[in-house]
Length: 291
Ligand SMILES: Nc1ncnc2c1ncn2[C@@H]1O[C@H](COP(=O)(O)OP(=O)(O)O)[C@@H](O)[C@H]1O
Ligand SMILES: [Mg+2]
Image (tube, rainbow, N blue to C red; front, side, top):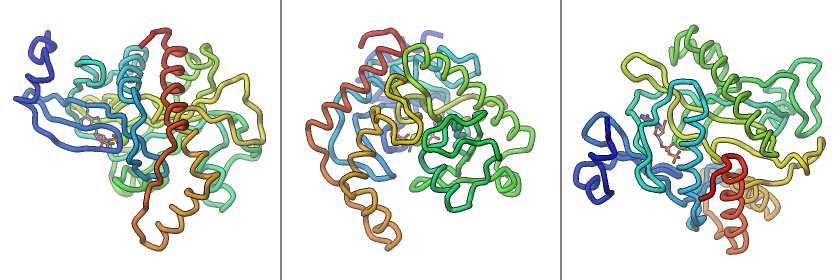
């Protein structure tokens, strides 16, 4: 069906769409026909903190990356069509209330959880920072508006979030998608360290939903990858590292524990420009398309 004809211009959409939700990055609108419109903004967040400064063209990159991945993956998904450079129409679904995370490398919050004895790993796992895991692991979290927490299979099943059969399908499918995406990023010179996916139900079918792009994964350039240290920062990781180096990450943790409001520092213009370039560069290298 030529949906694009129903919504030929954003001015038309405004007339028939209802604002639903403004997330960290996306603004979500409901269209009158059972579909949603995602508008990808240039907003940026890290460590669950929203920043006031924008990263120019980030929304466009995220939107086109999502389109690229939905087209590459054979798993049924909610994508309908693009609507302009930073907007996408998707089928409205009932979302599965877990974030499906897969990790291919020993990195990020997994290290801290393992050090604190909260996560058990097999004997043969190399626990040097950024070492490749023998096999990718499925490591889901809760889906929270503020701070997602790891959740075990038992907890997922006890809370009736999904059935056991669905859990097993989500685990298998998330890992398969990670492997497929890894092989594509690998050919473009990047390691896909980890990935977050969301699924939902549409007319009884389980579909891949939400968006897939740099906010959903960590990419490391292969040529500077080295086990045992922090990896060269790509796109959002640049901001995370700047926050850590300047003490803001610790400040956020302390303020969160103390129940204080978290205050985002302003991001220096040079860092914003560098981030913008990196978003564009990774898109062009991985997809082979220009923006
Ligand atoms: N097809 C869909 N139908 C309904 N809700 C969806 C669909 N795809 C994604 N969502 C939900 O839309 C919301 C997007 O908002 P949010 O995650 O807060 O935005 P952001 O990713 O910008 O932070 C999420 O709760 C996500 O689960
Ligand atoms: Mg989200």
